[in-house]
Image (cartoon, rainbow, N blue to C red; front, side, top):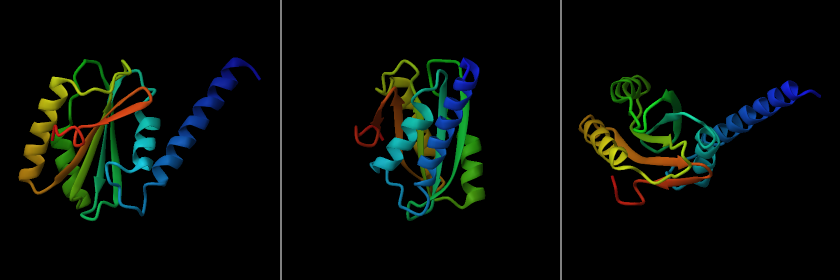
Length: 152
């Protein structure tokens, strides 16, 4: 097996593992502390070299409905897609949201800009009767919950 074939096989295996982790979220309440959720977010975001955002849309009971993925932020600050998220949440009749983004540096500690953006996001979505369950920051193989830290 040559290097290109091996690299392609690894990429396919990672994609399958990520899809399997996401599949495990269906049909169960997706609470922010859920180890399956954390595992999925680590797989989805932990190895990316660009800052990216995942938005999970949940029912009022916390059941997973859908996910939106926004890749390629080239700055050191996360840009939360507020308008798109609100539009999509209404379209899906979602009631709760979980957002997550990665820090390619490997340090999962939320920055001051992350905290400001999350509070603004929470204020706007809250006024529209969506609950922001958590904003999880992924760095390497670790996650930090802003909710657990009392930041939202």
